[in-house]
Amino acid sequence: MVPKLHRNPPMVELRLQRIPFASPAYALSMALRHTILRAPLGLHFSLKELQAEKDQIHLGAWAGDELVGCLVLAPVDLHTVRMRQVAVRADRQSHGVGTALVRYSEEVAREHFFDTLTLHARKAAVTFYQKLGYREDPGEFLEVGIPHLRMWLTL
Ligand SMILES: CC(C)(COP(=O)(O)OP(=O)(O)OC[C@H]1O[C@@H](n2cnc3c(N)ncnc32)[C@H](O)[C@@H]1OP(=O)(O)O)[C@@H](O)C(=O)NCCC(=O)NCCS
Image 1 (cartoon, rainbow, N blue to C red):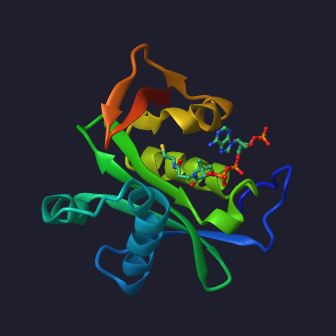
Image 2: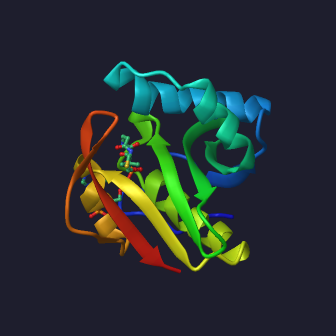
C-alpha cells in the first residue's frame, strides 16, 4: 500500500507491509521497538511478552530497505483489536510515517473483521491519535511507569 502524502512528506516513498513473526524483519522491528519504546525507560521485553507476539499481527513501514516504523495489533476478542508498540525511527518522526502506519493498521484490522481498535496511548502521544480521530476514555493510568490513556476508534 502507498500512503497519502503528509504535510511533511516522507523523505522517500514508504512501503507498508505485514511482518512475519520470528522473521529477519521481525528482528529489525524488535530492535526498533527496543530503541524507541523500551530503552528510554530502562526496560526489556519479557519472555512472556515475546511468546504472546506469535499470535499478534506485526506491521512495518519501509523506506527502501530500512524499517522506519512498526506497530503490533493484538486481538482482544472477535470484535476488538488492540494497537500496541507504535514506534517510528527518531530521524523519521514528524514525516507522516506514524499516520501511514496507523491508517494501514486500521485497514488490516477491517480485513480481519474487527470493528473496534483500542490502544493504551502514552499521554505524550495522545494528540497524535486524536488527530487521527481516536477518542480517549477519562482517567489516566500508569503502564511501564508512565501515564497512559485508553483510546479507541470505531472502524
Ligand atoms: C508518536 C509517533 C508514533 C508519531 O509518529 P510520527 O511519524 O512522528 O507522526 P506523524 O508525522 O504521522 O504526525 C501526525 C501528526 O501528529 C502530530 N504528532 C506526532 N507525534 C506527536 C506527539 N508525540 N505529540 C503530539 N503530536 C504529535 C504531528 O505533529 C502531526 O501533526 P500535523 O498533522 O498537524 O502536522 C512517533 O513520533 C513515535 O514513535 N514517538 C515515540 C514513541 C511513542 O510515543 N509511541 C507511541 C506510544 S503510544
